[in-house]
Image 1 (cartoon, rainbow, N blue to C red):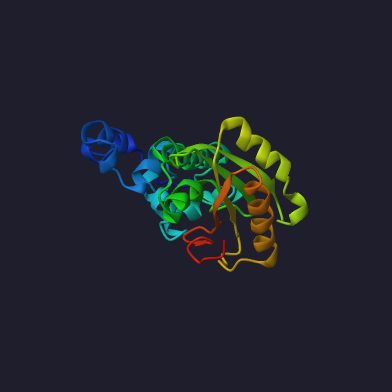
Image 2: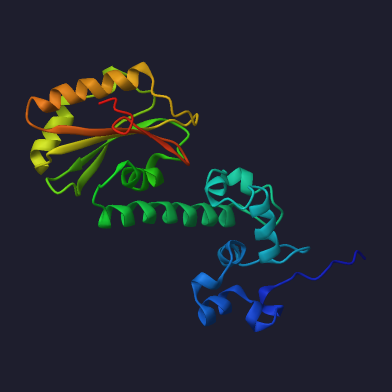
Length: 232
């Protein structure tokens, strides 16, 4: 009869080493990325504990949570011990974290510089595999009133509905606009289409005393500001 190795259950560890107990005793900040993921997946496989499996998954993406969030359910299921339920749990948790970052930024956000726009929008569009164009609406104190997705996919002048942009601005009482879009390729060089859209919205907005304050091209880790580069 084939001999199987015993499964390494968290319950077999000393109490201080168990992720759930560690969270309760020491708080969530005391846990490593692997320990937090171990809580999500609950168990490992016959050869490794939940924490060991989590460490191996993280090692495959250089311990980068942003890269981990880009994996698909099928990618995660390639790891022994990760089924569909565990894979979807991991991705759901990462997506909640991403959305939390965006909401937290909006709640406290007064736009004071291009970097504050990046902090607001990077969690939303910085890691997408496709392009999206968003408008951030500001009041007279430069506080964010609303942010709206204008288009999804390739960016061309035909996708920009100027009337919709200005109608929304008037409805919510915005006096300033910030244009943002992402470059999945990672390049921070504005295209001619990017420049054309900026000028089109700037001219249209000025006709009703609304100012385009900036246009940011956003990637996963950096950004390009039209205002900072004197391109407005």
